[in-house]
Amino acid sequence: MSEFRIAIVGFGKIARTQHVPAIAATQGATLVAIADPNAAPVGVPHFAGLKELLRDGPEFDAVALCTPPQIRSAQATIALAAGKHVLLEKPPGKSVSEIAPLRAAAEGAGRTLFTAWHSRFASAVEPARQLLAGRKIEAVSITWKEDVRVWHPGQAWIFEPGGLGVFDPGINALSILTRVLPQALFVTRAELAVPVNRAAPIAADLDLADGAGLPIKAVFDFRQTGPQSWDIQFETDKGPVTLSSGGARLIDGDRVLVDAKDQEYPLLYRRFVDLASRGRSDVDLAPFQLVADAFLLGRWHTVEAFEDQP
Ligand code: NAP
Image (cartoon, rainbow, N blue to C red):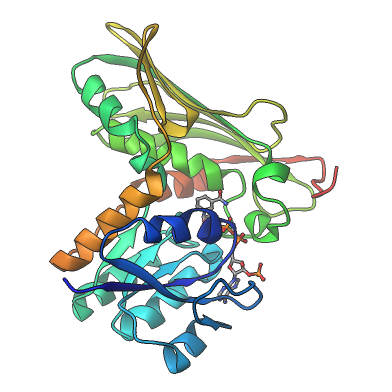
């Protein structure tokens, strides 16, 4: 494949901190333009939006859609119609059902659609999957707690409908879980805490299971201060296995098996380039479906108002 020319649409936090360096580190890939109404230029042509990029911009092969999820599927529709390969940041959109038409459009256009679950590319996730494949898992406990003011300052979209609230990070845990446990999982109970002045949960408490009744508990909380927790604990027939630091560390009992530097986005782009070179798509909605089911099954509790400034 000749040079894979990528444009980033939505040039906010994740585009600047992860996508730009990851594209630069990907052999055969080049960032050729960005589209964002307000972002400062970064040395490549800059456009106010996707339509302007397509009308006035340089030739390119693919877009990475790093906009808020509420507008992503509309942009993906336009990009696919223009013959571009499309990487969807997580979550893939604002609803599960809007992804099927995108999948069909990608197939019809012979282009790649990639639902990019970045946490699945964390260093310890694949080793964890392999380790757990040889164990009987008896219980799973997820603790995913972070300070929304630190990680999502000023991102009002996150508490709007379709923004997912605390499930914005929580879906990362679910993307790892659905990767390391091969069997189908489903939600059995959800308690959702929603600030009185917001539309999406700030905390959630979930029970999940598999067909054999494996007990899985998940606690997501955006109100964490101090140390942050992005951990999944597996009780197994040969002792506890812990996947911590968002999937970067793997501990078997008291033995640290993996403790590696973050390589998620370079690996994610390697996958995107590979998919496009083979004319394949990778669309997995399992984590998103679990979030949707938590919303469907959830008991909603109103909690105190949340303001960006404490
Ligand atoms: P963000 O900082 O709010 O960035 C979104 C950017 O999109 C903003 O610059 C926004 O501009 C721009 N935008 C809004 N409407 C647009 C449009 N019509 N066309 C082009 N650009 C538009 O959010 P983020 O943290 O980067 O997150 C973006 C996505 O990446 C989310 O789905 C999130 O879940 C995912 N993600 C985030 C992280 C993280 O740590 N932050 C990690 C992994 C994945 P304005 O601000 O001017 O509206």
